[in-house]
View (tube, one colour):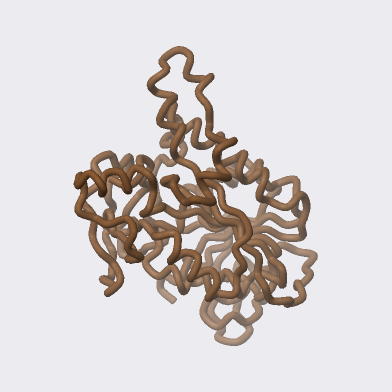
Length: 328
């Protein structure tokens, strides 16, 4: 086991020559789902309940404090890719003129919509086919999503396209080379070498990455790595303290060290796009959209958006724009 918090796997996976398999993870909080779509693996999952345990409350508190620090104080447009039910909404809502909540799970996106209503723009879609205009955002979040990606290079490249020059990309990943795995390897408690760069597959659609591979990936996509923060260590203490669990530390003070050294199970990375692409300015949230197939402009037609180039239509259902690739 590489990380206590392991997320939700799907059944789809394509083998890679640079990937090795791990032992099954024994405490997966969410059951595997056999779905043909990688982007909706959280559909009808009670993800809000997942964050109610003592340890995950501490982890949630730490992740929020990390984002408070890493996010800019103000900006034009932000997209939270894989927003779920909007767990992190309060960290960025008051800082940007346009807030887009994007997810592959309609059930989770409906929960976010019920909570935040007109404070955000809700888009249902596939993380590997992002339906946004180029240079439309100055900040993109990808929190607790990267470890599910079958094709991370393609997703990072797509995120680069939707960011303007000097745009910020804040993401986190499950760290293969964390301190616990190093100790287990040195004492021959695991056969997996945490120092090798190969991606480690824990379960279907759950991957652990070496910090060096993340650095190469980000640099190859045109991002300059700026800041790292580590998480997933001190939250293990809270359940052991019983009635005084509220006094357990979150690990905020050590987060910079655990991030810079990449010893934590989860590592946050804040990177800046090195290109100087002018930001596209929009007055309406809907103007941020583009066809996920051909990336051309959309026009609104009744209760749908229609691509001006390939004529594909994307319905609007009760305030959520369905930009998924299903049946298209």
